[in-house]
Length: 106
Length: 310
Image (cartoon, rainbow over all chains, first blue to last red; front, side, top):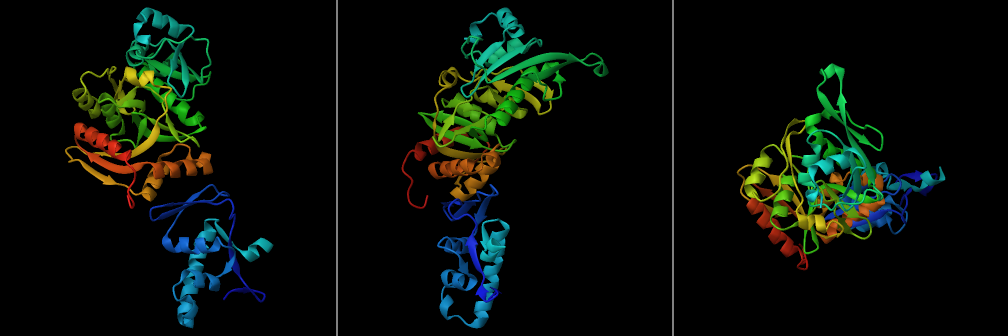
């Protein structure tokens, strides 16, 4: 797991109180109040984003939230899921919807 | 009504104090002395009331005759808006298309209190039908056809959505038809008032359909959005009607707005509310009569409560 010093990196929603979300059938559409851009989230990205709505989380904690059987998986599976979730987080970060906690301090 | 004014008096007004056109959303004062303009205006805006010129106008425009040496004195018409000329002049014979396009531009660039969709809008019994589309999909022809079969015209060009209150507002002006659709519509609705055909404009041949008196009379009455129809005209095609899910409808409607990015969160909320409160369909048609019947039926269905999963 990526760490800053000895503290695991946590991810958070940039403006959790101001981001606008609407669910339309299977689609989740999010309005970013900073960029004024509208984004469509697929099911996986929405799962990650939705989990972060309860507060900042590490990737490990996100695996527990988003992946069925996440608590008892092998280290190989965990590494694979870490890679997948990091990719989704990077996409959400590129949209300006989430950020790393250490980016706040920076 | 403007239709009752002697044409000589209409020309005099257009040369002097101007003619006031209350289109619902906006009131336009127009002046101009381009030959043929008064007659075309009277034919298409005939059902509009004669208004006092000393009232507030959202837009004041003038159609000026221009003669340019390089064009060997061929007459041109210039659209002048509040003293500025925002466009290149067009041949004088294209006076009315220039007027209509100019007013479209005014609305699209100024009326940002509302979400503006590129859409035809009609209503029946207070329920609005939005027909958003890109050019060439039969939006205007379908809008005109619905109006000819008893729907009230709100607008041919703009779906004007009042933010927060969630209503469609009328901007009643002539419906602009292009090329083959002119003859198609004339056959479909021989009783409709169609203005002169302007040949060889930048959009091809253009003619306008006058709004029905019923539409003009109700130009201050909003409608509740109930149905969104994405039209697709294909010559000879059999009618097909398919539901569009709300997520895709959001993409299509927001992508169709003139000022979505400008309005930001308010537009996001307005579009979300539109697609949540309306039933959305793709209607592919080859025959106007079939398309009108389909929209009629879809609107009747739209007022029934949504079933789970629909």
